[in-house]
Length: 172
Image (cartoon, rainbow, N blue to C red; front, side):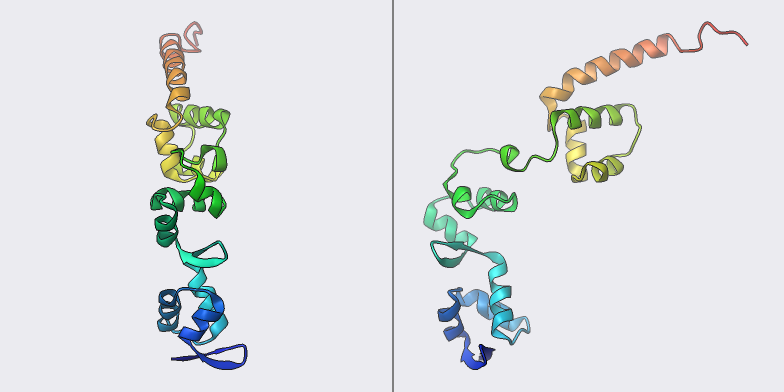
């Protein structure tokens, strides 16, 4: 299997030596239909990370550094550098690195859902988050410590408004 790389016809094995990519990734890119060496290397590096000057898979990175694969993948997806994703042994859900919502946003979302002002889809697109995040806020799975007291006060307000409608004393 020969590919064109820097105006030369070389094998995938030689391309692996020159680029530093694992052969499995290069062969996978080759069999997907790519024949240009630069395109093969670019495709192969999509799912690889650079660690200590070498391009390796995320699972290989985790076996080398004795980290959990899912935690590392989640941290890399959040935009954390490779070294920070591997070194960090704390189990946190990215709140410090990739939080999109502030506490006031969570309260506004919950109040909008309580009063049925907007749908979850509309709110999700407004704040730039996934619909499941809005659903989790409503079900107290996220920001529950903040939204639970708000729910109590909103229910109290709703009960008072039902007992005393705004037009109760006005006759027509």
